[in-house]
Amino acid sequence: KQEVTQIPAALSVPEGENLVLNCSFTDSAIYNLQWFRQDPGKGLTSLLLIQSSQREQTSGRLNASLDKSSGRSTLYIAASQPGDSATYLCAVRPYNNNDMRFGAGTRLTVKP
Amino acid sequence: NAGVTQTPKFQVLKTGQSMTLQCAQDMNHEYMSWYRQDPGMGLRLIHYSVGAGITDQGEVPNGYNVSRSTTEDFPLRLLSAAPSQTSVYFCASSYGGTTYNEQFFGPGTRLTVL
Image (cartoon, rainbow over all chains, first blue to last red; front, side, top):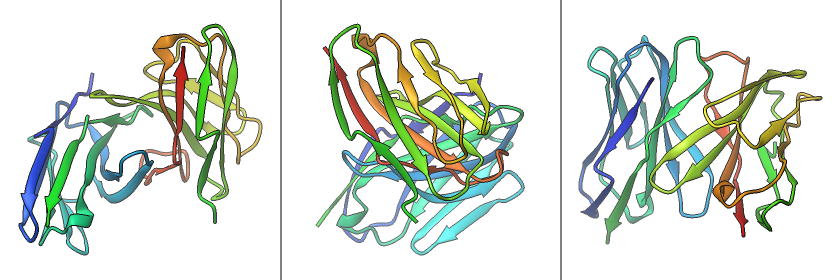
């Protein structure tokens, strides 16, 4: 059974800092990995989708990498801003399975 | 496009009551799914559908029913609500019913069962 872990559970950084969020998964047989942002009391907003054949994806100040063989993905946020404060979730799509598996998330606080 | 919409936003039920959570999407997505989110546990898949008339169970299907009569709508029914079903429920959709596509989520329904 695929397990997805996100460490740390919470992170607090000063504004302007570059930071990395981590996601690990136990089974490398995945189709893709998706990073989401969730604001308090809100739904999930898709940030980046990385297909299994890709190594990374970029969108603005966000860069996500995927190392399938080691079961790891990172989300890099450059020049963090208070508006980046949210919970960040990663999810993997296993082969032959419609059950998308989610991590519990990292709650990020960026202090002005 | 409205994207994925869910109603109601909030609901309080008493144990044993039944209700239907509504989900609709206007993106002509074939794949739709329901998740529940509990503190510290991430999201878990309840039921999903790869197209109209086709549904299947996810990780935590007990106590829930679904049907998919149209491409746009995918309601989730709670048959006899229990306190353990207190959670936030999210509906999601994506293209193609395949595993290669980005999922889009609705805003969620916050359900409390007393």
